[in-house]
Amino acid sequence: MKRFCILLSVIILIAFVYSCAGVVYIPEPPPPLKTEIKTAKPGPNAVWIDGHWKWNGHKYVWKPGYWEKNPRGTWVPGHYTKRSRGHVWVPGHWKR
Image 1 (cartoon, rainbow, N blue to C red):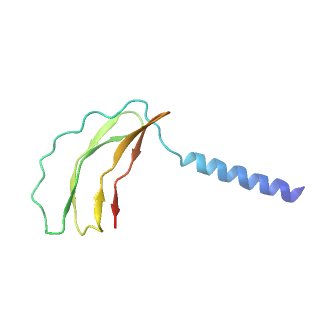
Image 2: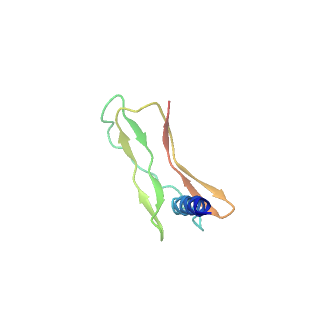
Image 3: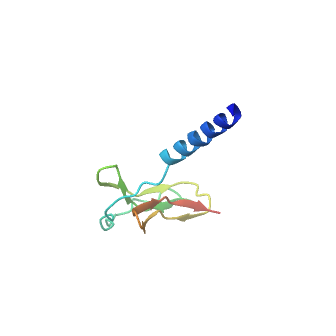
């Protein structure tokens, strides 16, 4: 019985930790993207990462675009996707 209680406690703890690191659902969609002016390219291997709206827990705030040096492949831009519980941010990433 003691072993069962320990196992159950561990399962509950894992479920709690997993739920805390879960997805953030945003009730309203982000505003339209802003048009940005790219600065001069800093080098031949630089890739422009577009700006995007970021949810700060209360409202959307604009995160400006920037140049990323030494790309590790092809940049796949981040985007919001609509799910049944709200909008979810899918971060950009490098695809090799």
